[in-house]
Amino acid sequence: MAEVTAKLNRLDISPRKVRSVIRIISGLPVGDAEAQLLFRKERSARPILKLLKSAVANARNKGISTDSLYVKAIWADEGQVLKRWLPRARGMATPLHKKFSHVTIVLSEGSVKKSKFTISLPSASTNSKKDGVTSKKKASTAKKKSTKKTEEKVEAKEKKTPKKAIKATGKTESSGASKTESPVTKVFRRKSV
Image (tube, rainbow, N blue to C red):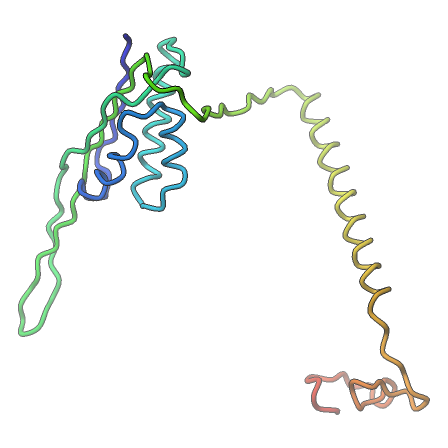
């Protein structure tokens, strides 16, 4: 069985916090592990997801099928510790230890479980001019359609809401001021100039 390894050094999260996330994906097929990491709200989930994708890319480069991969082992070691201090009362200082971690993941072939999810591959874009022109045309037609829909929605709203009746004096019901009284524009709606 072929194995693939990927490493993430100097992750600025303490190993204890990283281990709570990597404990979940250990032993899972790669698709399930990716799905678990996508929906985790911990801060360490995003870098570990990136590490998992890197390991899958390493497997593709070696010619290993990604369908049968699973997380054989994953661990977080302690990295360096930045020692800082925080000023406290009576001239004392409290030490702060900003811990780093090194995460290593090992993927192997021959998953015992079948993955419920599949890994999404990035779409391959060609750089030919024809594709660029057609994509621009598609984008412009989509914009035209969306603007037509918004115009139709605005017209429908205008039909539903009755316009304010204007009395014979030229004043609207909502504001007491006439539209033709003064050339000076109103600064505030509640006051008349």
